[in-house]
Amino acid sequence: MLYDLNIAWSPTTPPAELDRTLKFAKTLGYDVVALNHTIQGPIPTTALTNPIPELTPSPSVPRKPSPKTPPTDPGLPTVLRRATLTITDPATTNYRLADHARAYDLLAVRPTTEKAFAWACSSTTEIPALISLDLTSFLGWHIHHRTAMAAVHRGSRFEICYSQVLGGDNKIDARQRANFIGNVMGLLRATKGRGVVVSSEARSALGLRGPADVVNLLAVWGLGPEKGMEAIGAGARLVVVNEGLKRRGFRGVVDIVQTAGESAEIKAAREAAEKEREGGAGKGKKKKGQQQQQQQQQQQGQGQKRKSGESGDGTGAEGQGAMSKRQAKKLKREALQATG
Image (cartoon, rainbow, N blue to C red; front, side):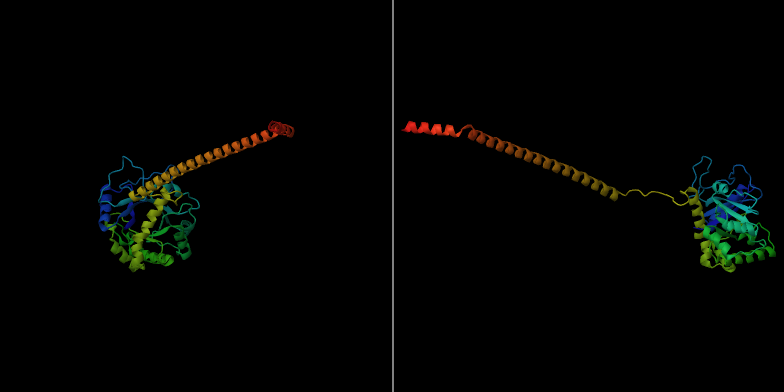
């Protein structure tokens, strides 16, 4: 899948022009795009709302179904909604990054000073998905390897927007084009090609380019074809998936997408095991009952024998004790007299 995470949008964008741009992006082969709302100036303290229309549901950032949601057009790519905050002085301004992250699918920042750049790379409470620089302007500072890699290790990605230099509806001069090429080479040198995402920032269909043209441009500017393809494919997908996981997962870590159903074979084996277990338990109970009955019968037989033995012994003892020696002599004498 190919991604373009920056198609410029504003409240004044005509719906027909937006529809034409999205369909052309789908024709070029982009499966997922993001409409970018650039926010400048003071941040309101009231509740934030997302003004970007919801054109197609996102599989990575699901929402509750709404009756106002239009049906999905097969000619349109999957459309995400993104906010880009222009950062000038983070020490004195509350940019409400967490509130913007909840209102939009993607959150990006565009620092304009060196302090703002360092803050965006390592000190934000809410980690932005993208750090997007205006590469056509003179930055006034060098992008250091340590600062850039600190942002990459936190999970942010640096964005290169090729429409800034190609023109389209944007009018640029030779000085801006030279600044863009120099800043891109400096960014690639600092990051060594890691953590880079390429987008268009196109304001119309004229600013879009095909994936092969984008990879060739990146190769000219110093990014190899493999990393160039990753910048519009796997790298951009990683940004979308991570942001979706942060919004719907438990603490941004655990996500249950879909539980697997129980197959027919597993269900039949489980039922057979339960029946066998129940049958074994019934046989065991029956055998145990028979053993208990046998033990009771044996105990009763032993008790009867003991009683009969005791009664026989007592009778003999009583008979012997009832005839004394005198009586025996008397009986013997009477017997002799009778015979004599």
